[in-house]
Image 1 (cartoon, helix red, strand yellow):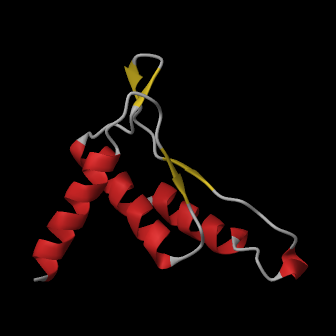
Image 2: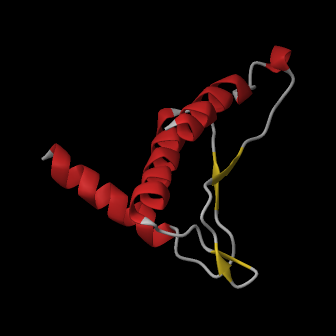
Length: 91
């Protein structure tokens, strides 16, 4: 069951990476956006899937972004995003 769920999730992410423009992933600091980014990184690095296209060329890098707030606001998750981003780069 877990293997089947993983297969379905990878296929959904693969479909969402198809585009005629560059594709980016918004990291919110939560497990869901980190999981999607991890799956996209796997597809790009291990299976050669492109992240859309940039000026006619296929994009071969995982591009992530986030929004930072003042640390005292209680809404800033940029630290968690940085941790996830570092793990994506290191793998």
